[in-house]
Length: 121
Image 1 (cartoon, rainbow, N blue to C red):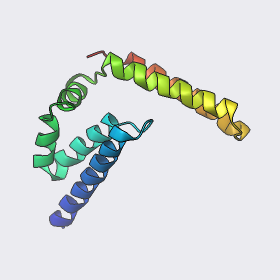
Image 2: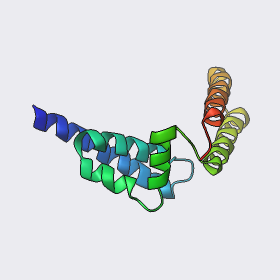
Image 3: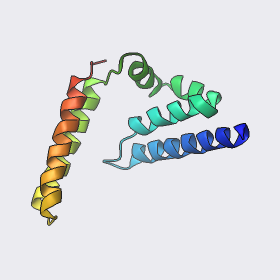
């Protein structure tokens, strides 16, 4: 049973890592949240992957800052906010159900408030 649990954690870590790498090249798909998830899953079933992510030259510091302080870099806050504004605007400009036009901008506003309340790196 322990082997199956480890396998599930590793598959989740690999899936999150794959989505994170896709996010590097696909605009609008976030990279760091998936890498945070991959490190978290790796810590439960694949310590070598967790260590690799924490030592990564580009993303390791961000993962460590999040773990230690729940901190988000200011540049990432601005990028996330810009993407949320773009998403909310596109929902208002293009055809969408009324519920989506109301709920999505309100949800994104809540997320933006949460993001900006996190400490800066």
